[in-house]
Image 1 (cartoon, rainbow, N blue to C red):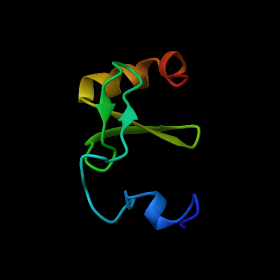
Image 2: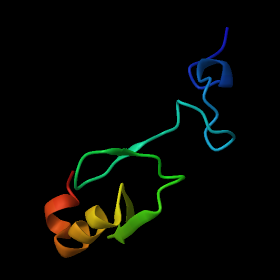
Image 3: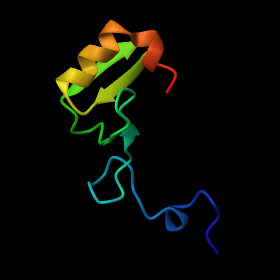
Amino acid sequence: MPGPHSAAAHPVHHGLSKSAATDRVEDPVCGMMIDPATSQHQADREGKTYYFCSNECRAEFIKHPAKYATR
């Protein structure tokens, strides 16, 4: 019987292929779910990369990072 950390217990193989089960992250400005592998808009703050749905959300984050970096 497979253990909780075996490949059989986790059918999604991260980084190997794209599927509907892709890990998504939340745009900290608008809340939209973003695929970081395909996002064209990102910014780094304090060692963390944030991903955005648009350049407008990225620009808002750059203007007010403390407001959004906690989301």
